[in-house]
Length: 192
Image (cartoon, rainbow, N blue to C red):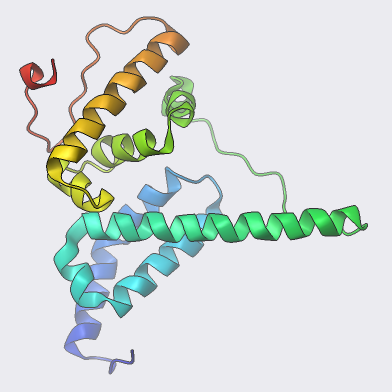
């Protein structure tokens, strides 16, 4: 779709991009330590937002995070395909293009959160990261996952329980571990 420079849509997209770029970059960076893949997924996310501007503007952060997650998954699939080709080429005497990549240690990693989170099923990882790291309310998590708010609340509750058990197994018992996402109105009695 072509739009005239200086048009209302052009202006809306520019504002949208400026408002959400940092959020999308942070969201994807927490899911992938490979900078090039993150930047590729960010670019693809905003390309989709440009093409589907009306949807992007009305869908809010949940729409944006869902699009970003799908863009990152596409980038990761492409990377895996390229790595397979590179390995086959390496077997034939050609060097692999991929270097040694690693994530910097962060406070989250020093607590073992990233390791424990990585050991959970992908479905649990996504719901926890949307709720806690992206600070989405349960209704927004539901929109990002494409399910009902009730389903999202149940998934979040179960993912929290699995995370708590995994943290306890990894680092010893936790006392009353019941974090509530910022922006989520959850009372403790509803979780028991």
